[in-house]
Length: 171
Image 1 (tube, rainbow, N blue to C red):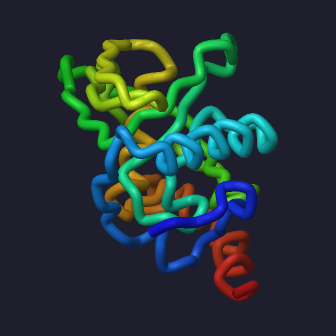
Image 2 (image 1 turned 30 degrees about the vertical axis):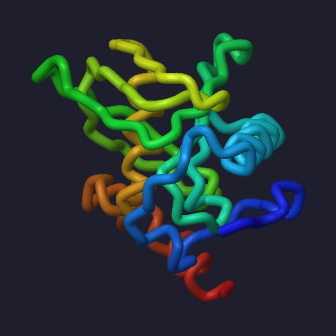
């Protein structure tokens, strides 16, 4: 699928693409790399810590992330895989650019290893037990059609019920 990266913008729940399992893409493709660069711009523009290709309407296994405390370390992850390195789980509040004004607590593994290809098509690997590991897991969920509303507690879903319904009605 070829698209003009400059025309890409955020899509919001309940867009069908947010529920699809994303497909692998060619990390060496200059087109995929151009889309990754556009995603970086959108992530920064919308003050996000991450953005997955399904969130811009593309069912691709691609996401971009950055540490909000160190925006210089933004990276694209093409066809990423995650490995849980610790059995420790933490619950923390998360939001999502495709679910504006919705916040909920999500349980995630603390330490993660990510492997894939970076935005230049080079092999990449990182390990973290910091906030960025949560971001990787959040964005990886998007590649599998999973949203934070699927993982938050029943109480958080109840608190956000009106905002979720308003999003669903706006389509």
